[in-house]
Image (cartoon, rainbow, N blue to C red; front, side):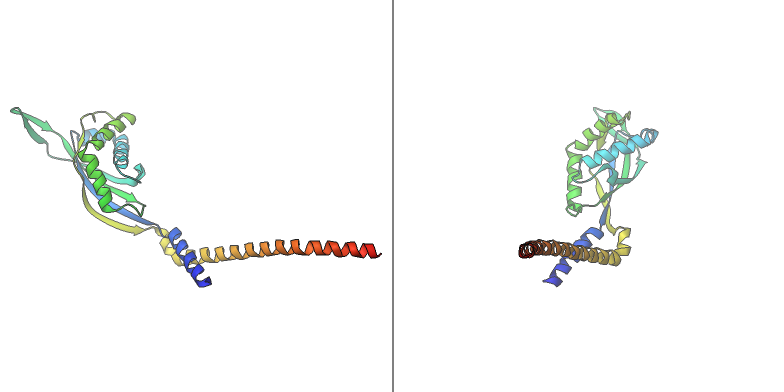
Length: 207
């Protein structure tokens, strides 16, 4: 029983110490947007993009969208009623840093593709452009994203894993021992005090 308790405690300590970051690398095209317009308001543009992506995903925060790189594409020419229209576009690469064991690559990709296809990312981008006071983003549209690769990495606390787990286990065991000792002491005092009081009363009566 004791060994089982120690094993469970060790497992809980590992859950606390081990923090696995999943890095997903995406590439996505955005139409009706030029790199010049994006870079002209780069800080606000990045915040707009971060919120757009995070709103499309469960359990992802704007700060989890990192390493945003925007590159100009060759202008796309579209024929509409025999009129040639030049549409500017950019390719955005970015990284998702996710610390959530329930999130998988397939789930995140499905959510992003759906948000791009149903226009959610378009409307979110325009909304946050207004929030962060970014101009010239009124007609932006998103293409479906593609995952280039994924990676998992433990944080720097893994270097101290053995020592940290040992400290956690020992600390909890010592704490439990102290708690049991205090409870026994209180219980013993409650049991002994009435007996001592009765003995003293008898001594007084005898005198």
